[in-house]
Length: 375
Image 1 (cartoon, rainbow, N blue to C red):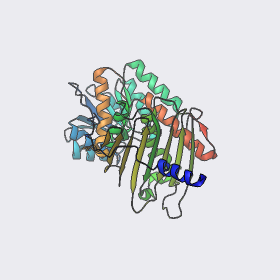
Image 2: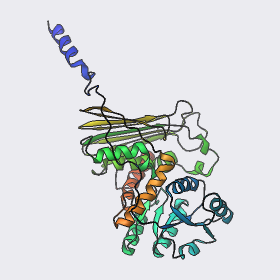
Image 3: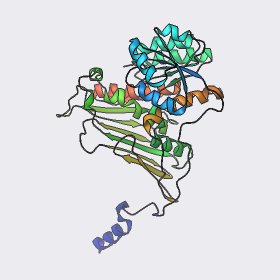
Image 4: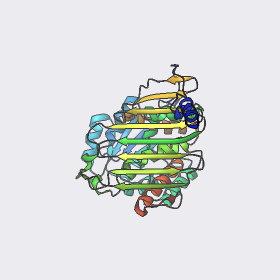
């Protein structure tokens, strides 16, 4: 009799396999996930650093109608080529100092490598320019704080190009959380499977923790974006190399971030040569949001709530719209005299997560967030 009773109980409960969300399809909430536009402010922008990534910046800026008026690069011919391709009427300067001395330039987009970027940011702030810094912002939290303080004292805005925040699916998820559609977020699970072997033999091959640091900083920033209201307690990360990878840095990496009432996981698999996949699952007390697709640009979003299932049709992409988002947020913040959501001050919290994960991977133990201040 006991076994028979237990069986009936199990069938009734269905061991949590029963559907908790209605099958009913509902209209997707309209959320402001696209890059914003300033009401009247149209600043002139200068570009410092004309490496490979700058073409994505400029694709976005041309699409948005931003006024880029100056370029500077260590190799002048690169700056001239980029100028000719995108803004033929812009001026090419030989030195950073000459560009920063131009009174017509209000914002500088600094897209050099991290180590050489710090003195350029400091010089730009000293010259009275608002700054959009390429990510990762700094390699030392203390230095980052000094730059933040310097900008604040000058009444300037210092933002970071964490463009992943304006990828369509990330931005929609962020807005859904802020609108309270998910209730209290309790878990964030981000898994990326893609092929990063193209970096073998390039300068990126010399970055010891390339995936967890230079690439993964986007995903630590997403976690901060989704769960930033509560400070992270600790991070535990592991890394290893696959047998088939071509690059030197570890291509199999993962991290678990602990909060008081939530947990986040980041899984990065950079040696996926077939069947690439990007999937995010954000679970809250009032709903769940799932984003999935074969790459970072092609994402299908599904929102599950007590009302039913909603599938918003998103019309922007990470590349190039994410790069529009970082600049547009900076411009809007300057116009409104407020701090941008991608401010350097805010980004330092994301870097704390990332640096703690890097140290955890080295030690093989969990690391308290805030105990690691630099690479």
